[in-house]
Image 1: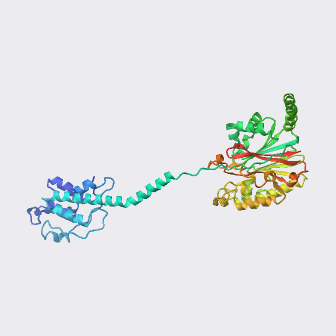
Image 2: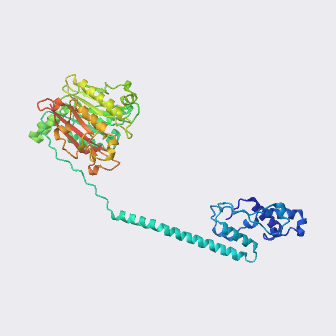
Length: 503
């Protein structure tokens, strides 16, 4: 239990045991004793006196109270004025020196009490017992004082716990969607769907029923996927998988080449080869449904097959900066050219958690997109810019508008929202707001999975169809007739959105 670090104490124990002399006897022998003539015993006696034997004596206090994990601290040292002069003075008398600031538990009074215990042989046990009892009382008193001082803290903690139990967390209220009206669709139309699937692998291999539901429910002519996260070497594998799940579509991939399994876009265009098969099916529908077969036929047919598919933004190059050189390789844009219009499917770069790409996004990317759209319009064809544009434009596009963190969160910063407004001022229209008004609320396309916001419809509208103004006039052909958000078709955190054109 007690492991002293002073080698002299060990030496004293060994010599005392070897000589068979009780520890209290040897150091108290007078200098004039006959034993002083023995050189060996004379050396033993001097060694014992120099190490202040009485102060290093193991007492019951140490055996009872010293923790086995933490050895006791040193006690106050007691020595003689001089080793040579000590032999001439009265034997057995020791002069106590000044007490040092040690780490031991005994104080100045306790050290002197232990000195008396060593000097008084008859009452040694009794003194040790008394000292032990006093120390125990002091400890008990200290514990009592500590417990009394902790009472206010414990009481405050108990009151806080009680208040927590009594306080009921406010219930989350579901953000309701306002009613929006959908126009009667013409017989000859073209439907486009845009969908951020977070990862195409998860959609096709883990949840293929969701894709089939989209095809059956909307029967789109063009599907634009964002954030596919495919490697270029996986294109062939997923082309076969798509053909087995949704036959009759041509797949065009644009995957990231710098950082594999990141970003990426894909478009599925209804193939003109599927027209004959669709006509056979509509003939069967005509027999079963009668008058409704005509609408089914025109919906299934491809009214305008694609003329050309290109990849990337021609206005953005690696020479535009370090971040631009990265973005160019991330497979973010696919352009599909039709006879009477063009579709630019885009996965807009996110500004990042620390907004490290914010300046590039607002000062470089958005400007290059406008230049590219203007360039396409110079050919005489209006354009449709769609995809996950990573911005919540209006207040009604944000469920918790006014929250302090929004100004520092990607997609809701004032810089991004203002920049999107400037894009629209260049002659473009947010199709959803054009058809349903700015007062439409609760229509979101993104919900945080981490926060579990989807059940409460606490989301953001980050996915858009932006079209040339000429596509939104009443007399134009083609023209925008419907825009919708399909919150029943959600792949992880984004919903599918659709746009219908009258041809």
